[in-house]
Image (cartoon, rainbow, N blue to C red; front, side, top):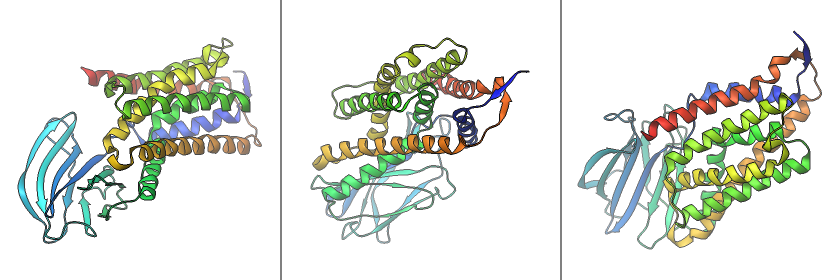
Length: 336
């Protein structure tokens, strides 16, 4: 078998893919548990607790633990809907929950994260994300603009860095695009596109059902992976000739995916522009960090050389395509 020198790009991608496949067997569609508290006055709160379901009649064993002296005033009602178990009830704490700590039990084993949203009577809100290492949060007094900005910035960064499908799309593009200027143009086109649809969908100007969008997002990764293979075979496709066009087109779809993630959290009514802007900035910062990490690691690996069989050139593209095709089949099947 003929051998060639394997480029540092391919070595890096193959390692990332192996790690991604080891960490997840299906695409990350951002399905954390969701806890919403809506202040009603007189120390009363309406509670919405949404937990990812396991089948049609089972759910993750996670529960909300309110502080001492909190009483249930309306008993919980429960229903399975949209792949989740949804519970609603009401509680009361004589002096309100401000300054009190609320604990979510059952996520310490790493089952899922929890998005928490508190809607106050004055229209302000508090949003945070609980992880297995930090399953508690303190109910704060009215949050200012700075707190809202920081909270949504962090959520944006966490979402993009946890979204394996979005990152694999960017990674596949980087396998094709060569040259700093073309890379910059491609990433910029992707950013502009998904920023437009993220804003349009979040503000209610456009409504696109989430499941079909997620299926097409997975298919977009398959398309770019196929373009990588075509380029290696000496038949460069549209992505090689005009990567910014492909990035912009599919970026519109990925923006709808980001909007679906933001819809899980919601926007504070008193600071919608700030929250939307900072979530988008967080997504861009996380994406930029990923691209910079890829480029920096690649430059480091470029110092090392090794001769590999020719077939290894195709392995990363086929691995990306196989994983994305699995996601596509899963998501299309879920539409039935």
